[in-house]
Image 1 (spheres, rainbow, N blue to C red):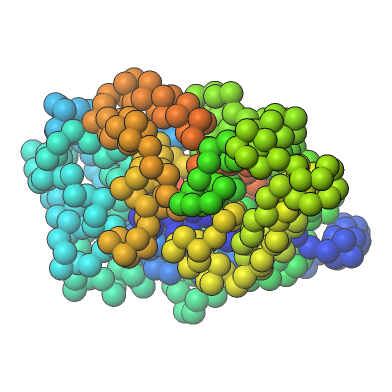
Image 2 (cartoon, rainbow, N blue to C red):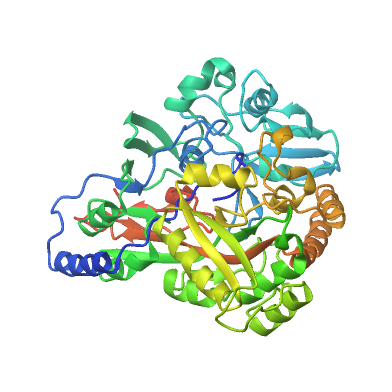
Length: 538
């Protein structure tokens, strides 16, 4: 994942593709289990498997995807996002722009926290006042810089006064709302390990990093979730996760099973595989600072040499869509651009024009040579090798270097690369384009190498468009982001590869679960546990 830390940490979390022998064993095991070898007594409640533990259950400090998604179940915010990345009310009943610099929220009536206390506008104000206070030390404080003050109008109405118009504000107001007495520095430890919120599930226990249990909250405004309990288990090994699903010892895995093993899981009569177009974005990163890649013709040529379709079909088993933009097709701000498309002849013409002719014809000396850095993840290495083969056909020699993820990512942060691949976990707010491509966000000592314009694109026109979009209306933003996507199409600072589907493997004990396009766990609030005896809810 590649996203600002206030949204998602950068990780390389896609599970490794198993070997061919392993895939065969998965299928064989599935057939055996289908013959009646499931565990006779599944555990009470619903069990969800994770491949890594959450870093915190306090949304103000959670930086991993699991930490943030679990925190949302316990302590949601005023807003959430639908599958088209549009903000929709959650704890808020409604919201409106009072002026260009004032946004008003009206809370749902009769909201309560898990401890029984009422949730009012005072709690909302206290939550955001604390987030903006440097004494709290939240890594998300910076994103509230545009907020001047928070005003309590009445018990259910709160207004955010801004220093200037700031259209991305709604994305930042999905932060967890906490009881006023817990928002200060003194409540950090308690909220991180024994959180209190107003979400559909309340905290029960977290005895170790491998096990976390939540229980349905009767006071949830959408109605008490129809399950007895919700247990999260950390199972780091993918083979073990698959076995737990097949044996009936787990009920849900979201985006943590390789596409290659899904056929085996589909064969099981007690499992279903549910997919939905997703917002995760995988791309080929390019270093524009110097050398051949500083020439846009070379970047466009590389794009013309890459055919994403075989990767989607064979490596991702069709569970992705080729991308033309960072924004997925279903996003409200998406605009279809021409893109580059697979065109080897055009690539050759561009390389000739850029001064890199073929020295001795096909199969001889390369026109150009690059180093391609990736992680040691098996899937990422497989992708790099396919891209290496495709680029070689156009006279581009590539050396693939697989590094431990920490080393690899540090090299990317500091600009020590020519080519690399990474993934943004969920693209919701289109202002991410500013984070990824505005010249002010080029990594360097001034921002502790934390900028997300990894390739160092410098385009003053694009900068102006992205800045204007932060102060425009929704319709104006759509027009401006269309212009930005066309400009990025021309600049080619990264080569878009694909948007992955959101995939859930669901047991027959969990009904009515539909995955979120963003990989969120909030759909669990609308799902229900099916009891084996009655086929009904607990």
